[in-house]
Length: 357
Ligand code: F6R
Image 1 (cartoon, rainbow, N blue to C red):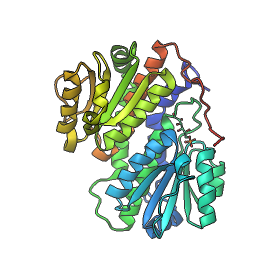
Image 2 (image 1 turned 90 degrees about the vertical axis):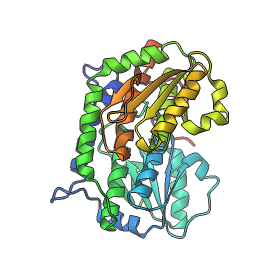
Image 3 (image 1 turned 135 degrees about the horizontal axis):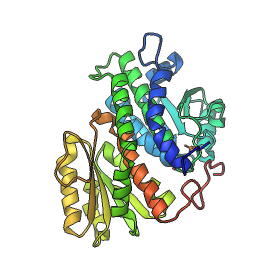
Image 4 (image 1 turned 30 degrees about the vertical axis):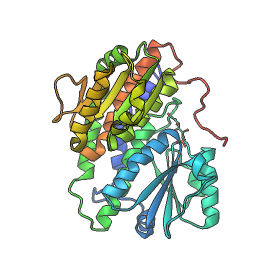
């Protein structure tokens, strides 16, 4: 039930701190250390390459998952859109492990890939929010998201849960391989939960930002580099699906290769700046679009903020920023949809679970 909330989406955005805390508990062993099912650990260990298969927001979580498995656990990863992979399979490695990310566990595009992969005899893992769902039943292994039912069509807390579970899988795998990991994920996730809490507690900031940047525009760009780029495509999808504003997420450096031609007087460009290693580059990209008339909204993080940044998020571990930086993007999309009188929880032409190919 949505209780006193006007929309499920807002309720589900607010639930995100507790979802992160619940996941920490769900993946803790008796010693209080993060742990995963030993059979899944073994499957990750055996694999020479992971193939992440997903659609929509779950695909965007997979892009972040690739960063985790490669950077933390040193396993090569490919991320594929289910509807493409099924009909155009790439060359596979010798010992692939297939990971299906799906909130509902019912997405037909993802299931058709699972069916084909099972015929080929490769091991499969489903990461889903719904125990007993089709993709959970049909895969060899399941990891649950523990996000609670997600009712709004636009996925919010499931994305955060997916990213958190992927981080845990990569981290536990790295530890079991005795790969040096120089941070305590459990502690860092707790910090993230508090950071998200402070963001959802200051909703007016995002309501104002949304009004300033999005209330009348026809289009909007989200830009970022590296892991911020992964989040920018998710921010764009949120805005498209509930507010019907045409939006795209771009890698900052790619703008000059064509897209910058679209910048007009007043075009909103929402830039994520949470990664120190590329902060100068992305700020340079913001200058380029601003010089051509864009209306920039910089979302940065404590410790790397500058005067003029529209929003400064609390500091979290650099690899975990997607869990937090997606939240302002969810909120500004939510308010943009409200200003425009859109049906936030049930956007036109969309269904919560897409059971046709
Ligand atoms: C976006 C959204 C969709 C789903 C996609 C996959 O907010 O909800 O893009 O992410 O249809 O659905 P699942 O994760 O259930 O396989």
